Length: 301
Image (cartoon, rainbow, N blue to C red; front, side, top):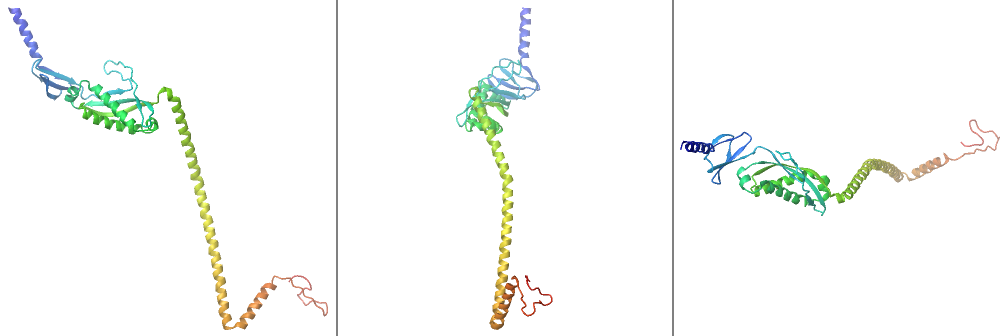
């Protein structure tokens, strides 16, 4: 009977030893009793529980940042094995097909939900990520998806994925969503490259046109301003001349009203002076043939 007692004692000690467990510093424990979670945040250290099979402990790397690849191959964190990626083909808002490679980084935020909220939390998260990506890309034209709004797509997918994960009680916190590559299907890649080249040429020509416009428009505006100023100066000059002439006419008319005969004679003489000052004058002396001193017989004076 002694061997049997020793065996029974060793079995009892081994059974009681199952009540002691340890959680390392990078782990978080979830304690279950008869299948029901009694503590989902067991801290690191040595702890005591009811012996097996009453209590069970599940250890999670809750502080570790996990990665999930969508359309891209990620090496296993333990084995290093890299699976073949499954292409993710999406339909854009203008009915074009594009391939997207996406990497999601997340942490376990709620261990209870992560363990018991779904059968396969990683598969659930991958399906949610694909759903969010389809929803965001399906509302954009292919040019924006391929070349223009990658950062905006990442932000919107992260927000949508976080909302889906919370609704599914996946128990995870989405840290970041990174698009590794967006590319058209190989069958139409050449056509897409032609479109990109055409867009680049259009942008270059547009920039050249804007540069020419920015050069010629200020010159034309300056020339227009100069002509306007010259016209304004000419207008002002003509107005001043006309005002002066009108003022002289008014003065002459006022004098004419006071002394009509004198004014008429003076105007006649002034007009005659102006006309004769520009004429050629010839003086003929019929008496002696000699011209007075200082006067030429013939010639303009």
